[in-house]
Image (cartoon, rainbow, N blue to C red):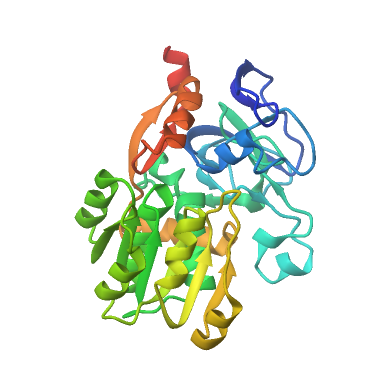
Length: 346
């Protein structure tokens, strides 16, 4: 089968022919119908992230939807032909975090597209506890985006920030996660403000229902946000960029008791005066990935038409390296999804 292989930081991705994975009794073979292309892959390419188990090369791709091709003898809940979304967190199911429903923090975590082979391929093997059944009315290309681009912001806003109806939210960055965060926040009933440096993305945010947008190139972004939020600032700021300036703007945009949730990151450091945290009673928190329940929840929201991931383009596996280059140049609006079937047509 065709697969996109990662050999290490600052090395080009390679499109290779590899063996179709062979499963054992407790595993499932999924025929990949769609794989979302995520900004995180750029962190692998530039060395910000490295597979911490050192097993290279690996197949990248951690946003996966498909159809079950084969099941092992011990698999009970799924069968050949089932439509599924794959939780890329292959947790142990036994540690204290897994027992508490926080599989994203598993002590013995493997992750598809991070430490083990992912979805930039025609097939991927996994275990049944990573799978969520996909309703027939949710297209594969939108389903692939649900785990990371939707699940991650859902976890950040619902579990971490505990965003409430009537509160205000600042979204820093309006890419694949930003478009999803806006929809999740609007479903909750929050007032939403979006900051980005792209006029096209800000226009899309307005069209999708943002209550206000601010050009990130402005000198006084936080002042503009505070004006829009009634002069006091926002209750929650969601960081999806992670640059020094965007983080500074977010902190300066918070109202008293505001919560700052960081999902996006770069190599920039967060700089903050502890006194400002004290007098404002601000809370800063990280948010990593999503739980299995989060994935179940967002699949249900997609089924109920409460959210609809923004997919701007569908490409072949061969086109993934070029899409990542465009993403690096901030030319991508929404999410681009790869369809492995298209590789056979080229």
